[in-house]
Length: 342
Picture 1 (cartoon, rainbow, N blue to C red):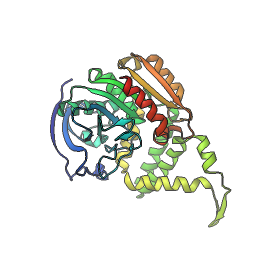
Picture 2 (cartoon, one colour):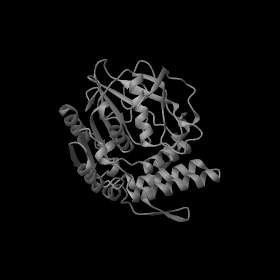
Picture 3 (cartoon, rainbow, N blue to C red):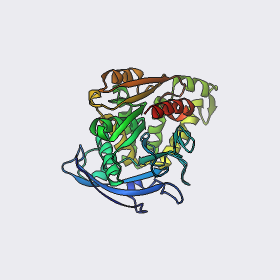
Picture 4 (tube, one colour):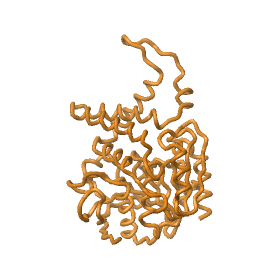
């Protein structure tokens, strides 16, 4: 597959769908925007796509691509003033140690980034964009790709499409396809956002969609422990302990996410499909005992079908799918082992 790439420094005039994203600061990681040309899965013909990226770590250090869920951005570590969404795992002295490893991450593309005729954005598109970015940065190969949630899905697509560019894949809470029950729940979330947008209250739709998502991201044990207070009768109705927690999560999400971005990336999860046999890169899979978004049965199926050696580790946690964020010590220990082995 051939890519054309053109780099330039980070710009302040980002597309509207990405306007909420923070810019890089100096001193800190290298940041930029790069034009990469590839043919998206859900559009006709090749087109130049602008990829926003961050690279943090010492020159010459082993290159590790790190990608998170759909709400994660390119700021993985605390290497700049923005702060990082996974700073408990990646950073100086972390499991992904930026004193000796370089961390490369991108902002997720959405369908609008691919052109007005693009019907959707696929996990394959994200993978091809990362491969093109490697070319632009003069990187022949990444030592490892570490992906969590949607990032794990993209990692599987990257390993299947560009195996020669990757030494090891670590896929956390992400499988070769979306589970049908999770697809059904995300479909309801998208319908809520579309309905609210049609009625002039997009923020309310994003708020409610996130509240619904939180009921799947976290495990039963956490809900039982966090929400054991008795209901209180307030303003003419009973208020339950769960409401305050979910309301706060929904409000935070609605403040920083656009409807267009949510709809595109939520749909991209459900369109994701990789044949396990096509993944011929040594792989470490990490799952969570209480994950209801990506059941362990799906990870077992993936492990058995992979076209390369694969280890599956299961972390017992009350935090469900969000275990990759809430269990940094356990996840970090497995990451250290996987990266040191490689």
